[in-house]
Length: 221
Image (cartoon, rainbow, N blue to C red; front, side, top):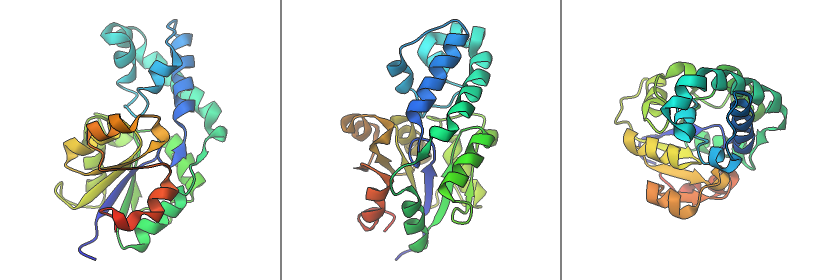
């Protein structure tokens, strides 16, 4: 094996089956603020940072009027759904497989710290990952590359360090492209293969477990 690679893995939707709960949480939060949007439209935005969702779904006027209120309520709605969120098939196996090959591992989330803590426990990942992130670590969320750049900084690595991003949405792939990382994707984000490939995904797998089994066919061999 050549020099170890840094694997930057998204948590929400990639390792934890949470995307549909997040979409429902946004639906309830915005509805409580007086605006109702179809859940499918909100689902298409999951993976994008919560600081951008109100503008993306309803424009800058919606962000000005209810953005902060909706984000606070969305966090509370997620709190109520955490028990329903579970690791996707093979999620921990993927983490172990990456570490067994000598790579360094950062779990990159733009979620709230209290939610990240729950997910780390669900994955039993604290003893595997070299580090992890939360929304408190960045000012600009995906599809901006900031979260991935912070992930490298957490390990003291330069921006051009050999690295690979694993995510589940076009927003992950776009952020990886801006950060200069190849992106591998699992289908749990609900995006079509054509969308993911057009965004720049180099490989697509059904589950984290499928990726773990095929890891030697990827830059994480």
